[in-house]
Length: 104
Image (cartoon, rainbow, N blue to C red; front, side, top):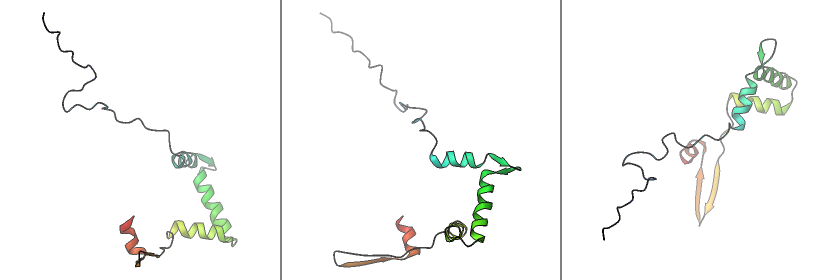
């Protein structure tokens, strides 16, 4: 009796060939991307929604609303750096704003 021929697995790829050449399919747009797209749409008077919201935010800050002032300052200057102080196993670890960036 002759031996049966070895079957080649059709699911195997050639050496060096990717099994998924196009890569993983993208998920849907992120929430931030969707908001950005809507914000770029024309709102009125040749003004985008983002521009209209910016004017509103400045208007509310000018009226003295603390939430609006904080929002503007956080976006213009960035949020202030915080100092992290933690004691672990009797060892005190203190990280200030400049060093904290190295750990993120």
